[in-house]
Amino acid sequence: MPMDPNTQLSKNQSPTSAKEIAEMSVVPYRESMGSLNWAAVGTQLDIMFVVGVLSQYMENPGRAH
Image 1 (tube, one colour):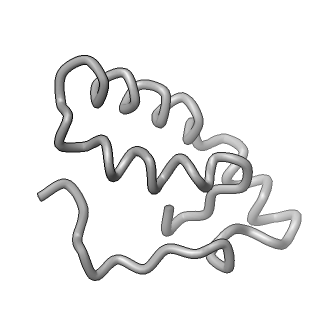
Image 2 (tube, helix red, strand yellow):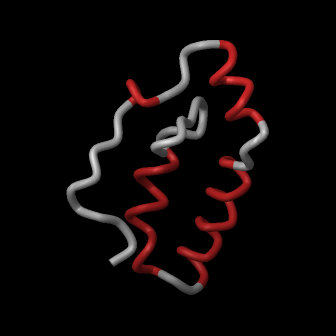
Protein backbone atom coordinates (compact mmCIF):
# COMPACT_ATOMS: atom_id res chain seq x y z
CA MET A 1 0.00 0.00 0.00
CA PRO A 2 1.78 3.17 -1.14
CA MET A 3 -0.33 5.60 0.94
CA ASP A 4 -2.20 5.21 4.21
CA PRO A 5 -5.91 5.73 3.43
CA ASN A 6 -6.32 7.67 6.70
CA THR A 7 -3.78 10.34 5.71
CA GLN A 8 -5.32 13.80 5.70
CA LEU A 9 -3.39 16.39 3.68
CA SER A 10 -4.46 20.01 3.26
CA LYS A 11 -3.18 23.40 2.23
CA ASN A 12 -3.16 24.36 5.93
CA GLN A 13 -0.09 22.12 6.37
CA SER A 14 1.95 24.30 4.01
CA PRO A 15 4.55 26.60 5.56
CA THR A 16 3.47 30.15 6.32
CA SER A 17 6.41 31.80 8.09
CA ALA A 18 9.56 32.90 6.31
CA LYS A 19 11.61 30.45 8.38
CA GLU A 20 9.44 27.46 7.43
CA ILE A 21 9.47 28.47 3.76
CA ALA A 22 13.27 28.77 3.84
CA GLU A 23 13.58 25.31 5.44
CA MET A 24 11.38 23.74 2.76
CA SER A 25 13.15 25.55 -0.10
CA VAL A 26 16.13 23.18 0.21
CA VAL A 27 13.92 20.07 0.04
CA PRO A 28 13.84 18.69 -3.54
CA TYR A 29 10.06 18.19 -3.49
CA ARG A 30 9.40 19.16 -7.12
CA GLU A 31 12.26 16.97 -8.38
CA SER A 32 11.01 14.03 -6.31
CA MET A 33 7.51 14.40 -7.72
CA GLY A 34 8.95 14.46 -11.24
CA SER A 35 10.91 11.27 -10.62
CA LEU A 36 7.93 9.55 -9.02
CA ASN A 37 5.69 10.65 -11.88
CA TRP A 38 8.11 9.08 -14.36
CA ALA A 39 8.11 5.87 -12.32
CA ALA A 40 4.31 5.91 -12.08
CA VAL A 41 3.83 6.30 -15.82
CA GLY A 42 6.67 4.06 -16.90
CA THR A 43 6.69 1.19 -14.45
CA GLN A 44 4.76 1.46 -11.19
CA LEU A 45 1.13 2.24 -11.96
CA ASP A 46 0.11 1.56 -8.36
CA ILE A 47 1.73 4.80 -7.14
CA MET A 48 -0.05 7.03 -9.66
CA PHE A 49 -2.78 8.03 -7.16
CA VAL A 50 -0.22 9.06 -4.52
CA VAL A 51 1.81 11.08 -7.02
CA GLY A 52 -1.35 12.86 -8.14
CA VAL A 53 -2.35 13.74 -4.58
CA LEU A 54 1.12 14.95 -3.58
CA SER A 55 1.59 16.90 -6.80
CA GLN A 56 -1.20 19.24 -5.72
CA TYR A 57 1.18 20.72 -3.14
CA MET A 58 4.19 21.41 -5.40
CA GLU A 59 3.82 25.19 -5.15
CA ASN A 60 4.20 25.33 -1.35
CA PRO A 61 4.86 21.87 0.15
CA GLY A 62 5.05 21.37 3.89
CA ARG A 63 6.71 18.67 5.98
CA ALA A 64 3.49 16.62 6.08
CA HIS A 65 3.40 16.51 2.29
